[in-house]
Length: 306
Image (cartoon, rainbow, N blue to C red):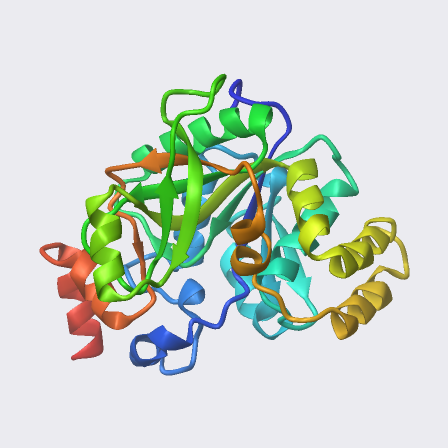
């Protein structure tokens, strides 16, 4: 992303449990391994594949991976081949809001002018360049306009995905950027069919934003939680940092960033991505569907049926 925007940072979310894919990852690894740490296609876990993509646009020293404490050991092993990338460990799982605010707080302690792109770690991307092009467009728009999501062209009336309904093109942004009319989370079949027909996008939960815009939006909807993380910012690098962090996580409630912040926010934008072959590998059937016709599927079937 060199030359596109200043102060670019990447945050990779890897704190989920991936329980719906456990039946497959258990066959592959003989343990209950969250999907982001599973090697579903040969040679790389989903987390490592995400880091491979991100490293082509973001410097390792400006890349953070957030995990839960129970998966710190496996995360460190898998990240050993990515020197410079920072591992951020949550004391306990409090949902995606804290999973985002914690690494943002650590960046805020060093660079209040940061422009941050947030990536899930557990999605499959067949072709990285279309996605990275959309990331660049979103970052440029975010430098001027706040929070920019990335949505991908919907291929079917999917009821297990979140959807973004785009609006018109605001003035002063690139041609690929649209306003967001609304979010729809896991619609029923009839609603999903209507969304497909009206050109709605699947929500990839990738977003670019000035750190200050994300922080202010979170403060608007989660004031008590953000107040706690304000305190944490001042402790980063200090001897009392672990104690303060543990206290914060003992006090804050569970919260979902999509539901509790983004769905209530005003003025969000979206960039449409197309051609990456993206899939949210939430359930085994989706894995087999997206790998259909590839050598990776043949290898996967041999591994689970030796």
